[in-house]
Amino acid sequence: MFFGMNIWDFLIFILIISFAEALYSPMLNVFTFEFTTPGREGTFLTLTDVPTYLTIAITGIVGGFLLEDFYPEEDDEIHQKRPWVIWLIIIVESGLCCVILFIFRPFFDCGDEQHEK
Image (cartoon, rainbow, N blue to C red; front, side, top):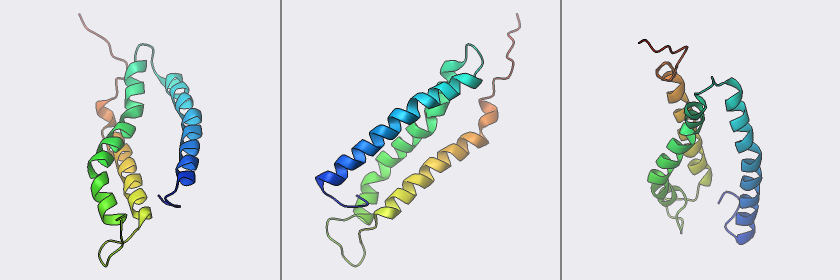
């Protein structure tokens, strides 16, 4: 969308995203397992994916409105093609999800849990 709307642009986009995901995803899991406490790996893996899931949900909800307002089929006085605004909004949503998790991190801190009997 940013560079054009033809098949080659879509293919290049898919190749770049696939390559980046193949490098990023396994390393995130390795990094997560390096600092987790034994027995809490699932919790930490889930928390590392929360920003992704929240961003996907929010983007799915507002995506149609973003396309309608910032990438219309035909330009007019009110609606002009501005794909950079769409990507900026998605980036801000992603960052906001990370900031929210950072603010509420005390609620996720397990520390040295000891079960009293």
